[in-house]
Length: 307
Image (tube, rainbow, N blue to C red; front, side, top):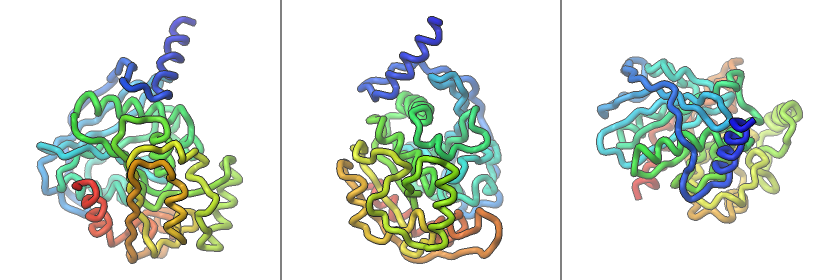
């Protein structure tokens, strides 16, 4: 009983975003992993050290992540995988997460002098997260990763999400004032709390192609609570109904209290025709995933980070 009460108190302290983290970190596993430099879309030019980490969260589950660090890093970028959120963290060749925009572009951040932290599914969500992305529990899991990074590095920490993982980044930003900002790339916007109903609506929107952002939320998260910096990247050629931006003024409406909101737009890319979900118009190997224009898109983000 006492142990459960203590866990609940620690969990609550993390959620309220206290000025100083109070959770006693418990590292379960820490091991060095070597990088296979083959099969990358973009070559690794920097000297990189990689560590696989497992850390226990206040709710008692294991949260895995990998840190790829460079010498004299300018900052740290936490990458959240889109879709279900799954990626093989110990697969260190370019095959890991290639269908995801941020994952396949991570070497571009490394080469520019930023540490990359790639977060995997929590221990109890191995089948995917979906509506869990908007939960307090998910934010709490991520806050433990942020706390670890804060204790390890003195440089800025940004959290990046693309497509569905943008929901996770926004949810975290509403509860954590320790991050320096969030990077959102073709973020999923929807207004249906029920997962099965949302999937039905999603399919309807894909058919219609192009629903306005007006009166919509990012994963039903109260985005007015986001007070950190926001970099919002979108592709004018994106055909995915839940991320296509019709009017950039709608984005401003979504983040009325952001410390600084920078909207970046690109126009172009390519699309692979396939029945494979990862290659559809809402997958990573399409305009939605900035396919074939990754360097341009990432450089525009880097320009903002380097200011």
